[in-house]
Amino acid sequence: MMSKPPISTRDRLIASARYLFWERGFAGTSMSELLAHAEVNSGSFYHFFDSKEALLREVLEGYLRLLRPMVIDPAFSSVEEPVGRIFAILAGYRERILGTDCRYGCPLGRLALEIDPENAPAHTLIAQNFQGWIEAVRECLDDMKPSLPPETDLDSLATYVLVVMEGGVMLSRSYRSVELFDRAIAQLREHFRLLVSTPARRP
Image (tube, rainbow, N blue to C red; front, side, top):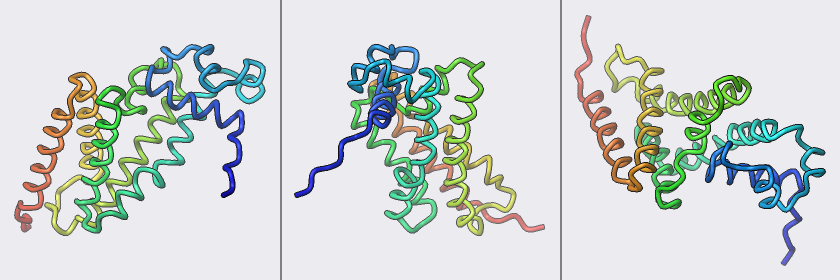
């Protein structure tokens, strides 16, 4: 059996930052903790990154690259029905909530609240990640369009799905219980049920 190739120093830094920023937050992760977790010295760090903020941007760019293959595509491949695909994405977040014992929440949501408003490059990347998520849900809504009321604003509805998810994750972290997430998703299901059952308005 062939052994796996060693992980590069740069990739170890990114992986450690991804984990620690999720677990402790950006400000809550010191450089010494980051270097110790990655088993890297400061000279190696500055060979690859100018600053902790530069490493943060790399983490956010990584989330953007991995959104489709790690989050969206697995959900879409598990269900054919458009609305089912939306809730498959949400089910993936539920699994992550349970997998962390309701402790860490959504890494992007945490960073969005924590990062200094003046850090425009980081917030731009966070927004791009959220936009990619919204666009994935919008794909499902486009497929559902014949069954939705004709006046439905699909962009707003896709954004609403994201807001429900992020809010549910945040509450579950605060309450240390997935029940709050489940309540939010249950109401979202009811919202979709009502939308689909609303007769199309004739001119």
